[in-house]
Image 1 (tube, one colour):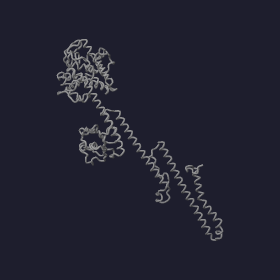
Image 2 (cartoon, helix red, strand yellow):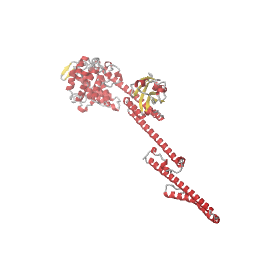
Image 3 (spheres, rainbow, N blue to C red):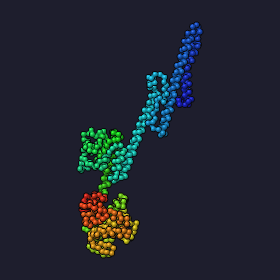
Image 4 (cartoon, rainbow, N blue to C red):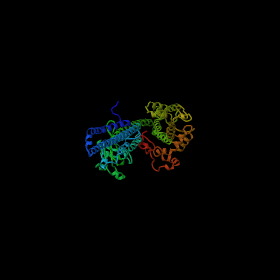
Length: 570
């Protein structure tokens, strides 16, 4: 049996109050007994009765004091009981998730129910129960603050994990970094975010992504970002205009006001500084605190890894693309009349693919297959490949073997999984829709779409270029010079459905003016193409030298864009 029990129970409260009442009245009863046995003779002997009256008054006073004590104790017990029940109830609500800590403050008046007796000083004086209530409220508030802090850190951690996931899943910086920067702007609640890449050779920084501004380049050491790049130390400032090295010219020219700035270095996994990440103007004109610094440091480390990965990927792609273009150029270089053939077929094919809205990966497969579609001609004897005139049946058979040789060569390449279709697409560009092509005589849907596109581009370039051998239009034998452009168009239209896929021919004719303008003035004489361009798209005909492929009609490797069309390798 427990000696102490809770006061919350009705029975326990009654027992406690009864015990308190008896303990208060027993001394009074003892006093009455002593008076009755020892002072009674004196009272009776007093003829005036004053002693009796005095004793009676004293006994009444002694009776009042226990009653007052009982009343005050009863109030305190009830207050403690209410406080206990309130704390228990609100703790249960928090535990069960029905309310948060911040909604659980306990009101002093609603718990104590203070009466109006006594003066103002007495009512305002804080007693022990009030102190206890204030202590519990302080505990609740502290818990609420800590819980809010924990929730905020959880949100930041979730955002960091999500950003890290984006960084590891997307290696194309042109799409990845704008997404990351926009997310940083949202998560950090800032007006602008910028990511600078450091060029140590030129000792400059240039913007990879900068919201709201045009790309800029600045020397290392200049401005906040330049200072971070130079020192490698984080800068967290409340008002950038107070810094002596801050350049206000951008703000003044663009009607902007840079206030709070958090700028920190971005390093690759080896510890080399490769960039600078900067956020400007926290929402509400606030300042960046320690939590912001921790979050940005975590983000900067992920950005550094991503920058390094994209750099390595770009290097690998450039190396791979250079190898492909070199192999293609080797084939074209074996004969002066075919120089540039593979590149032109590639550009025509990509124009068709964009017109047909092929997805990004299919376009890349097509680009590589078009560049390498004639790689099998490496295995053709010079006596056949360079022959000036009509082939014999044996020579034609050997020449027609080059698609199969193309496939054998390309199957020895290690293409990534997403580019594994390149050998098949490249080796089937001489198949025809009606099955009369070679080397396998495939028909219709058995021919990859990419091969159908290359077939149209390949024949178009062959017919519009000078060759050693004569050209044919049905049973008609024509000269080896470039065929009149209108006749080439007629052949494409006539053989749609037999040699070529109709949808490919249709797409090619829609983008033909752009294809002709790519090489107008270089491969094509203006007089050869202007009439057709004027008829198909008169508004696009240029009065001066036509644009080259570097104008951005299609995406090409950087080594091709650097030179005019007539000077490109291959």
